[in-house]
Amino acid sequence: MKAFAALLVPGILMTSSWSIVAAPFVPQEDSQVLERLLYPADTPEVRELRQWRAELSRQPHNLDLALRLAWGYVAQGRAEADPRYYGYAQAVLEPWWQQPPVPVLLLRATLRQNRHDFQGALNDFAAVLEIQPRNAQAWLNRAVILGVQGDYRSALRSCLPLSRLSTQLLASACAGSILSVNGQAQTGYRLLQDALDNSASADKREQLWAITILAETAARLGRVRAAEQHFQEAFRLDLRDAYLLNAYADFLLDQNRPEEVRNLFQNDTRPDAFLLRLALAEQRIGSPETKAYQQQLADRIQAIRMRGDSTHLNTEARFTLHLLDRPAEALQLALRNWTVQREPTDARLVLEAALAADDPKAARPVLDWLAETGLEDVHLAQLKQRLTGVQS
Image 1 (cartoon, rainbow, N blue to C red):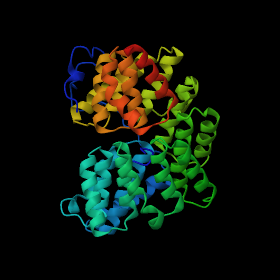
Image 2: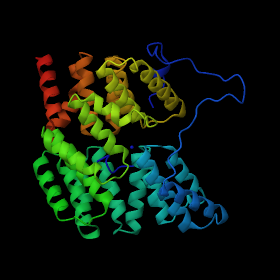
Image 3: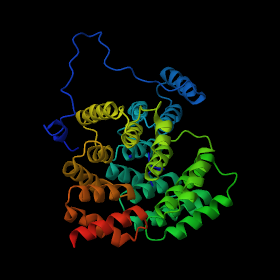
């Protein structure tokens, strides 16, 4: 579900066990350069954002223009996996933030969803739907959040109105994504494939979401060739999408193809998730660059913690487990992440950490969840079998 979603633990990074994290750096003079920020290419989308920003500076109370610019920032933030754009969007909406009209309320909910304030986002979407019960965007985002939280029954109920309020493809993608992780993967896969076959002229973003779901579902079912075909089909749409890139990189790592992950991200490490996967690939290859990427990630995670950002627990747990080789700490992070979001990747991280930490009992919440949902995933099934063997 995070393919469409826009996605705390103080103290651990500052303990002595995080020996890789350097002491805070204090510049000696104001002119000292701390970091050179990378800026996006001068694309038509970026130029359009600049134009709207200039227009809004001349018309600061133009709500329609503010909404257009804010949604543009959200789209750019998603494409680049750059959280700064979500901050820009909120700043644009500041005059209307506390007493928002419905369009701002919808955007505020989306921004809260992005920073994992799921309850705040659900409250805002509920307020939108109370005023506009036919608001398809609110129903869809509500389904996404409930899916991320593992409440599949409620998520599926939120998908149902889309069959009369939106396109066939969007409605099928919403329902198919839920079925694919709720013990009905084959049904969800067929539903989505049929919808795609009959939606050749559909919006490219909708197609991208649907095809990415197909790719991930095929991968979970162990259909490697089909998953590869779906990923390549998604890339042929020629849309920049950070989620797709991360999902494909994870697929490549599972297939022991780290060189391809290196090619994917070697010149594109601004997003933390990209840097993590590149570091994992370099580690798999045995590259001397691994240590440098590891240090960069450690520094970034320390900065995230200092900002009070709680949206990167999955990344941090994965970094701690696979790059720092500290399974006990990784397990605690993975379990904390599990209280916030419950997707297959989150479940896998808990099981991997529990195995590595030789603490199979800690995996019980996830094992119970797997039994309840009937989630079909070849990697989770293998981990479950190994954990059961350890316990016996």
